Image (tube, rainbow, N blue to C red; front, top):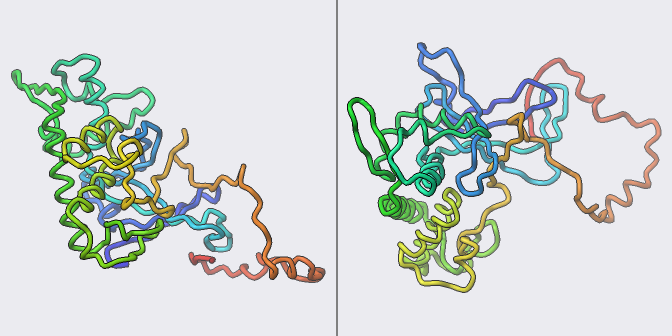
Length: 310
């Protein structure tokens, strides 16, 4: 894919395939470090999730996974059972600092230096967000500021934040219309298939969809406030779930959760119900396999490569 680069983790125990813009790894000559995976608090759920900072720290990305059953990767002469394709999407760093500002406002309600607000014993990497120039350049969209000497102090501003989120919703709607994505009541199934022409989607449909997208990156209480601020009419149980019918998450588009080692990339097969065998599988299970070679015998070539097994 143009402008994208696929890379593979070298450690056999922790391999995965990542699709990312080349700009992430093409660092300026003065920078001697590469892109960094960082374990941060998910702004919606508060749980650990994986993010990627570019080499120059100018951009932060959310790590997501394209995941389907029964997929694996052939990497060199080995088979990697985790067949997920990881990919990254740009994320406005303000979403990552927003929960900390809200929490500080609820506890202290006073102006504080931003480095005293954005700190977390469980997620020390959160300080990395402040290294992104965009964070401090745009933090005034969600805070009030005071300057004393050469120091700046900040306090969360609820009204400013709602206005900022409304602008985000408007930008999202423009992008949705430009791509021609159907967001109305005709959208069915998690693959967003159309059952009626896109022209039937109303402005309210687009606004509900945009609200659903933004709700993936803000605390639930703020999502409910935004719903009211956008003056969206209530529909049964949608406010409680923050998931309007037209906005359905695809199984292949999920944030990657992170454990203590930052690398939870192996599929967990525990607790899964055994699947029923098809007629063909039952027939194959009865075949005499004596004398047959193991599949690994066919991958003894010294040539290394990466292919997808379906």
